[in-house]
Image (cartoon, rainbow, N blue to C red):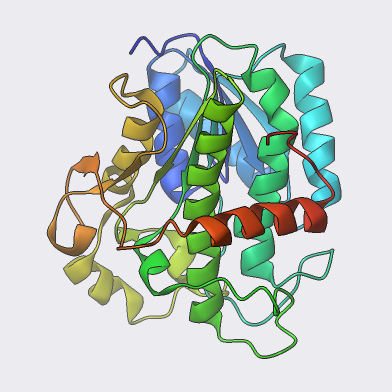
Amino acid sequence: MDISEKIVVITGANSGLGLETAKYFVSTGNVVVMAVRDIKKGEAAKNELLQLFPQAKVDVIYLDLAKLTTVHHFADAFSKKYDSLDLLINNAGVMIPPFSKTEEGFELQFGCNHLGHFALTSLMLPLLEKAKQPRVVTLSSIAHRTGSIDFDNFDGSKGYRSMKFYSQSKLANLLFAKELDERLKRNGYKTISLAAHPGISSTNLFRIGKEKEPWYIKPILKLIAQPAEKGALPTIMAATDNTLVGGEYIGPDGAGNRKGNPTIEIPRHHVYHKSTMEKLWTVSEQLTSVKFNLD
Protein backbone atom coordinates (compact mmCIF):
# COMPACT_ATOMS: atom_id res chain seq x y z
CA MET A 1 0.00 0.00 0.00
CA ASP A 2 1.02 3.66 -0.24
CA ILE A 3 3.20 4.08 2.81
CA SER A 4 4.90 7.41 2.13
CA GLU A 5 4.38 10.33 4.48
CA LYS A 6 3.21 8.15 7.32
CA ILE A 7 4.25 8.59 10.95
CA VAL A 8 5.89 5.45 12.29
CA VAL A 9 6.89 4.72 15.89
CA ILE A 10 9.45 1.93 16.29
CA THR A 11 10.49 0.84 19.77
CA GLY A 12 14.13 -0.17 20.08
CA ALA A 13 14.91 1.46 16.73
CA ASN A 14 18.56 2.24 17.42
CA SER A 15 19.95 -1.21 16.56
CA GLY A 16 19.28 -4.63 15.05
CA LEU A 17 15.83 -5.32 13.64
CA GLY A 18 14.53 -1.96 14.78
CA LEU A 19 17.21 -0.05 12.93
CA GLU A 20 16.74 -2.12 9.74
CA THR A 21 13.00 -1.47 9.95
CA ALA A 22 13.68 2.24 10.44
CA LYS A 23 15.92 2.26 7.34
CA TYR A 24 13.08 0.94 5.24
CA PHE A 25 10.53 3.46 6.46
CA VAL A 26 12.77 6.53 6.16
CA SER A 27 13.89 5.39 2.70
CA THR A 28 10.25 5.37 1.55
CA GLY A 29 9.54 8.92 2.73
CA ASN A 30 8.00 8.42 6.16
CA VAL A 31 8.56 10.12 9.48
CA VAL A 32 10.20 7.65 11.86
CA VAL A 33 10.06 8.21 15.60
CA MET A 34 12.73 6.14 17.32
CA ALA A 35 11.51 5.20 20.80
CA VAL A 36 14.71 4.31 22.65
CA ARG A 37 15.93 3.90 26.22
CA ASP A 38 19.42 5.25 25.42
CA ILE A 39 19.17 8.70 23.83
CA LYS A 40 22.89 8.79 22.98
CA LYS A 41 22.62 5.55 21.00
CA GLY A 42 19.38 6.78 19.48
CA GLU A 43 21.02 9.97 18.23
CA ALA A 44 23.93 7.94 16.81
CA ALA A 45 21.44 5.73 14.95
CA LYS A 46 19.62 8.83 13.71
CA ASN A 47 22.91 10.18 12.33
CA GLU A 48 23.53 6.85 10.62
CA LEU A 49 20.11 7.09 8.97
CA LEU A 50 20.77 10.68 7.87
CA GLN A 51 24.08 9.63 6.31
CA LEU A 52 22.31 6.92 4.33
CA PHE A 53 19.23 9.02 3.55
CA PRO A 54 20.01 12.77 3.82
CA GLN A 55 16.33 13.70 3.42
CA ALA A 56 15.23 11.33 6.18
CA LYS A 57 12.73 12.59 8.72
CA VAL A 58 13.76 11.06 12.05
CA ASP A 59 12.88 11.92 15.62
CA VAL A 60 14.30 10.39 18.82
CA ILE A 61 12.17 10.21 21.98
CA TYR A 62 13.11 8.52 25.23
CA LEU A 63 11.24 5.35 26.21
CA ASP A 64 12.24 2.67 28.69
CA LEU A 65 9.68 -0.12 28.55
CA ALA A 66 10.90 -1.41 31.91
CA LYS A 67 9.65 1.82 33.53
CA LEU A 68 5.95 2.38 32.99
CA THR A 69 6.26 6.03 34.00
CA THR A 70 8.40 6.62 30.90
CA VAL A 71 5.75 4.96 28.73
CA HIS A 72 3.32 7.68 29.85
CA HIS A 73 5.99 10.35 29.35
CA PHE A 74 6.66 9.07 25.83
CA ALA A 75 2.95 9.21 24.93
CA ASP A 76 2.75 12.77 26.25
CA ALA A 77 5.88 13.87 24.39
CA PHE A 78 4.70 12.28 21.16
CA SER A 79 1.21 13.81 21.34
CA LYS A 80 2.72 17.30 21.75
CA LYS A 81 4.58 16.90 18.45
CA TYR A 82 2.21 14.80 16.35
CA ASP A 83 -1.55 14.79 15.79
CA SER A 84 -1.84 11.16 14.71
CA LEU A 85 0.07 7.88 14.36
CA ASP A 86 -0.06 5.55 11.36
CA LEU A 87 2.11 2.65 12.51
CA LEU A 88 3.17 1.47 15.95
CA ILE A 89 5.85 -1.21 15.73
CA ASN A 90 6.39 -2.93 19.09
CA ASN A 91 9.88 -4.16 18.28
CA ALA A 92 12.09 -3.65 21.36
CA GLY A 93 12.97 -6.71 23.38
CA VAL A 94 15.15 -8.19 26.08
CA MET A 95 16.39 -11.77 25.64
CA ILE A 96 17.56 -14.22 28.35
CA PRO A 97 19.28 -11.77 30.73
CA PRO A 98 20.35 -12.62 34.27
CA PHE A 99 17.43 -12.34 36.67
CA SER A 100 16.35 -8.74 37.08
CA LYS A 101 13.17 -6.77 37.54
CA THR A 102 11.44 -3.76 36.06
CA GLU A 103 10.86 -0.61 38.06
CA GLU A 104 7.42 -1.94 39.00
CA GLY A 105 8.82 -5.29 40.20
CA PHE A 106 7.97 -7.55 37.25
CA GLU A 107 10.49 -9.98 35.79
CA LEU A 108 12.38 -7.94 33.20
CA GLN A 109 11.51 -9.89 30.03
CA PHE A 110 7.79 -10.16 30.74
CA GLY A 111 7.67 -6.57 31.99
CA CYS A 112 9.60 -5.05 29.10
CA ASN A 113 8.63 -7.27 26.16
CA HIS A 114 4.93 -7.57 26.99
CA LEU A 115 3.66 -5.22 29.70
CA GLY A 116 5.56 -2.17 28.46
CA HIS A 117 4.26 -2.62 24.93
CA PHE A 118 0.76 -3.38 26.22
CA ALA A 119 0.69 -0.06 28.07
CA LEU A 120 2.25 1.83 25.16
CA THR A 121 -0.31 0.50 22.69
CA SER A 122 -3.17 1.52 24.97
CA LEU A 123 -1.86 5.07 25.29
CA MET A 124 -1.19 5.43 21.55
CA LEU A 125 -4.51 3.97 20.36
CA PRO A 126 -6.40 7.31 20.30
CA LEU A 127 -3.71 8.75 18.00
CA LEU A 128 -3.73 5.62 15.83
CA GLU A 129 -7.47 6.01 15.33
CA LYS A 130 -6.89 9.45 13.83
CA ALA A 131 -4.88 7.96 10.94
CA LYS A 132 -6.33 6.58 7.69
CA GLN A 133 -5.03 3.00 7.80
CA PRO A 134 -3.52 2.54 11.27
CA ARG A 135 -1.73 -0.62 12.32
CA VAL A 136 0.01 -2.09 15.32
CA VAL A 137 2.72 -4.70 14.68
CA THR A 138 4.00 -6.61 17.70
CA LEU A 139 7.11 -8.78 17.46
CA SER A 140 6.91 -12.33 18.75
CA SER A 141 9.40 -15.17 18.23
CA ILE A 142 9.60 -18.84 17.35
CA ALA A 143 10.37 -19.16 21.07
CA HIS A 144 6.62 -18.73 21.70
CA ARG A 145 6.26 -22.40 20.73
CA THR A 146 7.75 -23.53 24.01
CA GLY A 147 6.10 -20.80 26.08
CA SER A 148 3.30 -20.85 28.61
CA ILE A 149 1.82 -18.08 30.74
CA ASP A 150 2.54 -18.56 34.44
CA PHE A 151 0.05 -16.21 36.05
CA ASP A 152 1.44 -16.92 39.53
CA ASN A 153 5.05 -15.90 38.93
CA PHE A 154 5.29 -12.68 36.92
CA ASP A 155 7.94 -11.35 39.30
CA GLY A 156 10.11 -14.47 39.16
CA SER A 157 9.97 -14.91 42.94
CA LYS A 158 8.91 -18.56 42.59
CA GLY A 159 11.84 -19.47 40.38
CA TYR A 160 13.57 -18.05 37.32
CA ARG A 161 14.89 -19.62 34.15
CA SER A 162 15.82 -17.04 31.55
CA MET A 163 14.68 -18.95 28.45
CA LYS A 164 11.39 -19.96 30.07
CA PHE A 165 10.60 -16.33 30.85
CA TYR A 166 11.69 -15.21 27.37
CA SER A 167 9.37 -17.78 25.76
CA GLN A 168 6.57 -16.64 28.05
CA SER A 169 7.06 -13.01 27.04
CA LYS A 170 7.06 -13.85 23.33
CA LEU A 171 3.91 -15.97 23.72
CA ALA A 172 2.34 -13.01 25.53
CA ASN A 173 3.28 -10.78 22.57
CA LEU A 174 1.56 -13.14 20.15
CA LEU A 175 -1.57 -13.55 22.26
CA PHE A 176 -1.79 -9.79 22.84
CA ALA A 177 -1.54 -9.03 19.12
CA LYS A 178 -4.35 -11.46 18.30
CA GLU A 179 -6.61 -10.46 21.20
CA LEU A 180 -6.10 -6.78 20.40
CA ASP A 181 -7.15 -7.30 16.79
CA GLU A 182 -10.28 -9.19 17.80
CA ARG A 183 -11.27 -6.48 20.28
CA LEU A 184 -10.56 -3.68 17.81
CA LYS A 185 -12.79 -5.33 15.21
CA ARG A 186 -15.53 -6.06 17.73
CA ASN A 187 -15.60 -2.41 18.78
CA GLY A 188 -15.55 -0.98 15.26
CA TYR A 189 -12.06 0.53 15.31
CA LYS A 190 -10.05 1.30 12.16
CA THR A 191 -6.78 0.13 13.68
CA ILE A 192 -5.72 -3.44 12.95
CA SER A 193 -3.20 -5.51 14.89
CA LEU A 194 -0.73 -8.08 13.57
CA ALA A 195 2.20 -10.09 14.88
CA ALA A 196 5.52 -10.81 13.20
CA HIS A 197 8.74 -12.59 14.02
CA PRO A 198 12.23 -12.52 12.46
CA GLY A 199 13.07 -16.21 12.60
CA ILE A 200 16.63 -16.50 13.88
CA SER A 201 18.36 -13.23 13.04
CA SER A 202 21.78 -11.96 13.90
CA THR A 203 21.18 -9.07 16.33
CA ASN A 204 22.60 -7.80 19.59
CA LEU A 205 19.94 -9.73 21.51
CA PHE A 206 22.52 -12.51 21.55
CA ARG A 207 24.71 -10.56 23.93
CA ILE A 208 22.69 -12.40 26.59
CA GLY A 209 22.83 -9.56 29.09
CA LYS A 210 26.52 -8.80 28.45
CA GLU A 211 28.14 -5.74 26.90
CA LYS A 212 29.58 -7.93 24.13
CA GLU A 213 28.22 -11.19 22.77
CA PRO A 214 30.08 -14.38 23.84
CA TRP A 215 32.85 -15.48 21.46
CA TYR A 216 30.97 -18.61 20.37
CA ILE A 217 27.85 -16.79 19.20
CA LYS A 218 29.13 -15.44 15.85
CA PRO A 219 30.15 -18.80 14.31
CA ILE A 220 26.85 -20.34 15.43
CA LEU A 221 24.84 -17.46 13.97
CA LYS A 222 26.65 -17.81 10.64
CA LEU A 223 25.28 -21.34 10.43
CA ILE A 224 21.71 -20.85 11.64
CA ALA A 225 20.78 -17.18 11.37
CA GLN A 226 19.92 -14.66 8.72
CA PRO A 227 21.12 -11.04 8.75
CA ALA A 228 19.04 -8.43 10.56
CA GLU A 229 17.98 -6.75 7.31
CA LYS A 230 16.39 -10.04 6.22
CA GLY A 231 14.90 -10.62 9.66
CA ALA A 232 13.15 -7.24 9.46
CA LEU A 233 11.15 -8.23 6.35
CA PRO A 234 8.28 -9.95 8.22
CA THR A 235 7.78 -6.79 10.27
CA ILE A 236 7.78 -4.67 7.12
CA MET A 237 5.30 -7.00 5.42
CA ALA A 238 3.01 -6.93 8.45
CA ALA A 239 3.16 -3.13 8.46
CA THR A 240 2.64 -2.51 4.75
CA ASP A 241 0.92 -5.39 2.91
CA ASN A 242 -2.59 -4.19 2.01
CA THR A 243 -3.92 -7.74 1.57
CA LEU A 244 -3.61 -8.33 5.33
CA VAL A 245 -6.77 -7.74 7.33
CA GLY A 246 -5.45 -7.97 10.90
CA GLY A 247 -4.77 -10.91 13.19
CA GLU A 248 -2.17 -12.49 10.92
CA TYR A 249 1.23 -13.73 12.06
CA ILE A 250 4.09 -13.06 9.62
CA GLY A 251 7.39 -14.94 9.66
CA PRO A 252 10.09 -16.44 7.39
CA ASP A 253 9.00 -19.23 5.03
CA GLY A 254 12.05 -21.49 5.44
CA ALA A 255 12.49 -24.70 7.45
CA GLY A 256 11.22 -24.24 10.96
CA ASN A 257 10.48 -20.61 10.04
CA ARG A 258 14.06 -19.83 11.01
CA LYS A 259 15.09 -18.13 7.73
CA GLY A 260 13.57 -17.09 4.44
CA ASN A 261 11.16 -14.67 2.88
CA PRO A 262 8.16 -13.29 4.79
CA THR A 263 4.86 -15.12 4.61
CA ILE A 264 1.70 -15.65 6.65
CA GLU A 265 2.58 -18.25 9.24
CA ILE A 266 0.32 -20.56 11.19
CA PRO A 267 1.31 -20.56 14.89
CA ARG A 268 1.58 -23.80 16.82
CA HIS A 269 -1.63 -25.73 17.34
CA HIS A 270 -4.03 -24.36 19.96
CA VAL A 271 -1.80 -21.35 20.69
CA TYR A 272 -4.77 -18.98 20.67
CA HIS A 273 -6.39 -20.35 23.80
CA LYS A 274 -9.28 -17.94 24.36
CA SER A 275 -9.51 -18.10 28.14
CA THR A 276 -5.74 -17.56 28.43
CA MET A 277 -5.88 -14.59 26.03
CA GLU A 278 -8.72 -12.97 27.95
CA LYS A 279 -7.09 -13.57 31.33
CA LEU A 280 -3.77 -12.20 30.09
CA TRP A 281 -5.56 -9.08 28.83
CA THR A 282 -7.36 -8.50 32.13
CA VAL A 283 -4.26 -9.12 34.23
CA SER A 284 -2.15 -6.88 31.96
CA GLU A 285 -4.61 -4.01 32.43
CA GLN A 286 -4.45 -4.52 36.18
CA LEU A 287 -0.64 -4.75 36.35
CA THR A 288 -0.02 -1.71 34.12
CA SER A 289 -2.96 0.38 35.41
CA VAL A 290 -3.98 1.20 31.83
CA LYS A 291 -7.29 0.40 30.23
CA PHE A 292 -8.13 0.02 26.56
CA ASN A 293 -11.92 0.32 26.98
CA LEU A 294 -12.26 -2.50 24.46
CA ASP A 295 -14.86 -5.12 25.44
